[in-house]
Image (cartoon, rainbow, N blue to C red; front, side, top):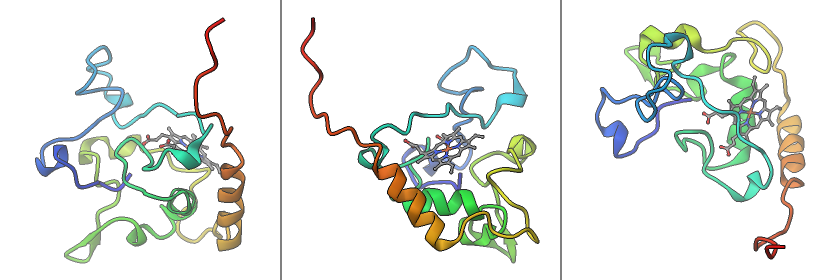
Length: 140
Ligand code: HEM
């Protein structure tokens, strides 16, 4: 994810590394897991913005467009400093090799995985996952 502005990230040394901490400590030392986050359910996802572990995206359109273009057009998502795109800037450089490359992400030179129309079609699908329940069923 691109780094988000928050109380925690006001400290440039703070990184939420997901499975390897700092909120949890049971997998501390598993450097291969730094930057890994739980895959969440998409049930009711249209109702639960903002998205991703650091709440960086406010819309499902951004989520799906990010999936389709993160590695094709990183400058769209990450800041550029001194002419260098700061890809994966919410992870210390040491762990950036942990970021998965490949489906659903495409690299520069490959055709985009999704057209703009595809993005809005996928978002329309995600909106069908709202179940309409507003209260928990009564206990049996
Ligand atoms: C078209 C295919 C996909 C769609 C539409 C999709 C959609 C989403 C959405 C909407 C979220 C945000 C959920 C939330 O914050 O409540 C999400 C998060 C996530 N998805 Fe996907 N996803 C797709 C493919 C994948 C694939 C292939 C993987 C694994 C290889 C994956 C792994 C994850 C993970 C780990 C998160 C949580 C990341 C974080 O919190 O930073 N997704 N996805």
